[in-house]
Amino acid sequence: MDDFQQDEGRNRSYPVQEHMRWQRIEWRIQRLGYVVLLAVVISGACGLFSKGFLSDREEVSSNGTLRVEYERFGRQQSDMAMTLRLQPQRGLYRVTLSGDGVDNFQLQSMQPQPLRAESRDRTLTLWYQTQSLHHGATIWLGGQPQSPGKYSFAISDSEGGNVQFTQWIYP
Image 1 (cartoon, rainbow, N blue to C red):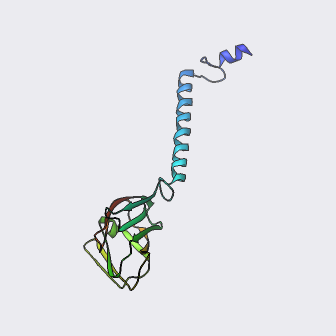
Image 2: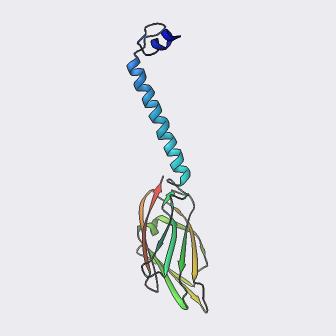
Image 3: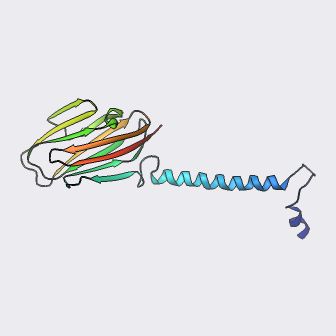
């Protein structure tokens, strides 16, 4: 048995020609491949490529009137959600979305529906009105990114809150 184990590390010519140096290099490459594959699978499950805790982000404006919850990573043609939370406001208020991400984001749904919406020059402005709003407002946007790449967004409200962030869209 001892001779057999000792023989495993040496070059052989029977039944096939073996060069153990190259065999050990191949084994190392296989182990490295397993580790990389496992890292990719775990990263994907955690949200590095789409939904998950690595992708979920929240940005708050410096004055605290606007909070945006979004997904940092997404896939082309997949559903993505964005939630805008505004501090209590009374009467007519405005939310403006701008940046190159606005043109890449095909809006599928918006709740609640705005009184008025205007779109121009990579900017979408939404107007809402309320009589009494004690707990703030929440706006849900659902859409699909149309092209892969890095896209920036800037969102502002009528109270002066401003949030900027970037999304990565994979093919």
